[in-house]
Length: 65
Image (cartoon, rainbow, N blue to C red; front, side):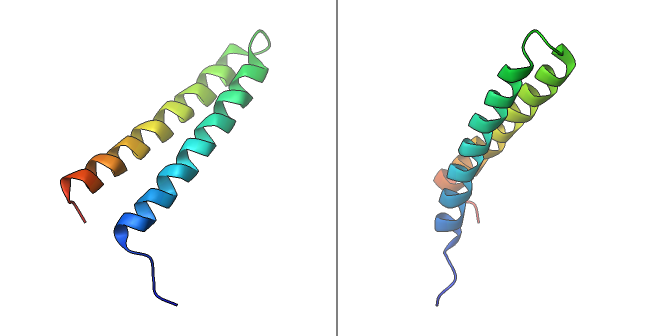
């Protein structure tokens, strides 16, 4: 079986990162009113996952390997 192209790999990983982001936001929501530190850390992780996903898309659109 052939290895996925970089475009296919980036697409799969972007979808995975977006799913992870949603899970992290749900986890953060569970901490609302209980522990603001944990809520903030999980929200920050979710934001970082979104930034990485967006960068993969920008690299893909820009033709970066």
